[in-house]
Length: 414
Ligand SMILES: *Cc1c(COP(=O)(O)O)cnc(C)c1O
Image 1: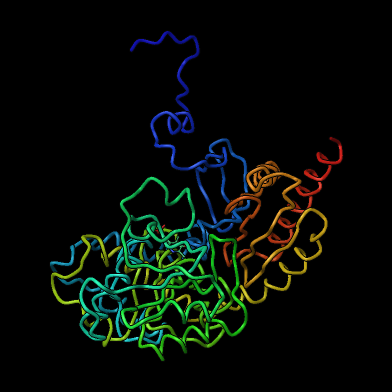
Image 2: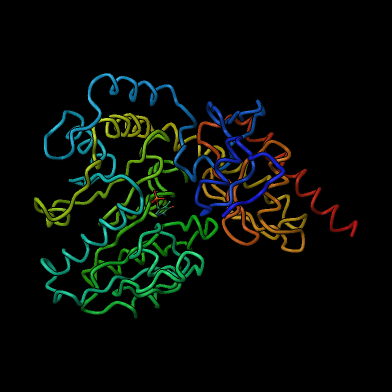
């Protein structure tokens, strides 16, 4: 087909992306060129405060010196072996991460979704081999409003139409129950149930915190029913909520942790499934794997991440920022916000839908130098890097209050 165009093609980075990149995202129109700590600089030199932090993949900020040093050092030595051979970073990484989680073993993967898939396979195999469930009959209970990634099996049990629809046929074997409802969970479990997969706090749903005591009750239910409790801590874990894991807030130890995002230090994808040997031991050579999983470069960075978390410094920072964030957001309830949920340095804020969509609010924030992302509808998530200074956080919250005023003004003016 020949088209006669009078406008020259847009060869800017953004233009090329629009033309040649698949449109499976709708990014804000800023083009990052460099970043440091909590700040992103664009290709035209503007600076923005990063209040998304890669959905918590950048908990330690952009290019943290200790993480860049670990990566640079490893780049000079060896980056990839595949798991066909041993390398000198994998053993220490597994031991150090297992110790952080209080478990025996680690199975490293790459993306979060892959780690969730690994945990699902693990649960089915454990169910068959250890619990004695007939092969092909295992069920896994999941929560309404969940987000666990984008693979076929995972979206098979997503209630989000955009994530789910038109990708059938779907993977069977999942039952979804209301989040926060212990009775519904108990009713969904039967003798063929092998696991409960749960986000201790639902991130994509809008930082939804379950009722106090719920995780504890989930733990009890799993123990009594001989079902694995799998905690997807990909977004909630690794310091974000003021503890190493979100399950720690209720002193709950799941059978299986699923980790990702911040584990790679914001440098590389690195995920992991962490559990005791009586569970993770069901995997034997050839039964599961990944070419890049546990590679030297990623695990060297992962070791530096674990070392930083072992000090407790980042968890303490998130705890210290929580009251500041809560106080400032509470003051905006009724003044543009209908409510907010704060846990550690993480907030889900609900914009009054009369003022506009979450997207429009993020655009107003962007015009003021703050980058954030709507989760869905009128809900916006704030998850700045945990190393953000109190001053920068206050600056960002001032801009947020201004953006709300702007949207309120527009509505009043109509
Ligand atoms: C982001 C996320 C995932 C998926 O991780 P990817 O690296 O994007 O595959 C899974 N679970 C939760 C809770 C997440 O936030």
